[in-house]
Length: 149
Length: 147
Image (cartoon, rainbow over all chains, first blue to last red; front, side):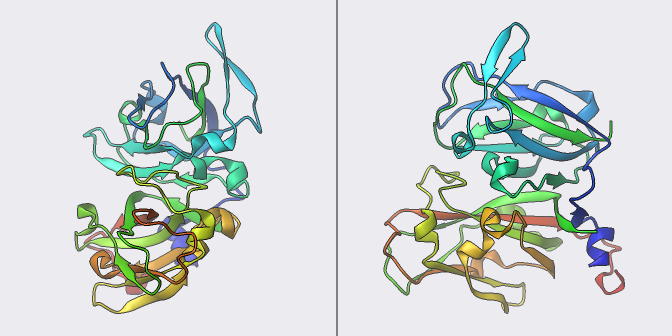
């Protein structure tokens, strides 16, 4: 098991994934459909190898959030089964793809999603949907990101 | 320390069911990114419709009860099975305390891997079962015997 830790195959989930954490948002401009693609705003703090963990917040933990001048609602955990997050490099190469539903802590016994990436460009990262759902223009997709910064 | 998988690279792997006869086996779709010979599989996870309603090609994903009728067999680069008829539901993270099943130091031969329908009661024709293959690139200097 020790070599698994040394080779970064596994990480200690009882420790904080990164030194810092913050929320980032995606705001749909319309009800999501099977072809919806949402890009993250650029964030230099998350580029390179700084990102260490990810979670998607649902209404179980936060019912509403104020973004700018608008109040947005959060979906329950059932609302994320149509979407997938893609993490990509500066050259737009795909590193990681993961269904949003497994990033919702209450769906996975509270365990954080640990990641180890190199050459990440947060502005190339995106959420794409294979299926429409309950996420509307009134909602926000809220991610808690863990990073070293 | 108590560990869970760190995701470095991941790709969807999909198995389609063009028919749903019990006892039939179906192969995985090819994933070009996993064809390289320096890919080490670190973990595998399965999804039913509780986690993902549609597969990347838009097909309906099998239900949780349907997934309980499926087993998966995985083969290494030498054509030897290293997982034999494991229940698909055993690879669903939410059904396993949030842990991703780990696979160590193996190169997978995805074209040989297959899913078998043992119980077709809740598996419909043209449904799919989706997996996530977690992997990392083996560095040239990496000698697995010494780690």
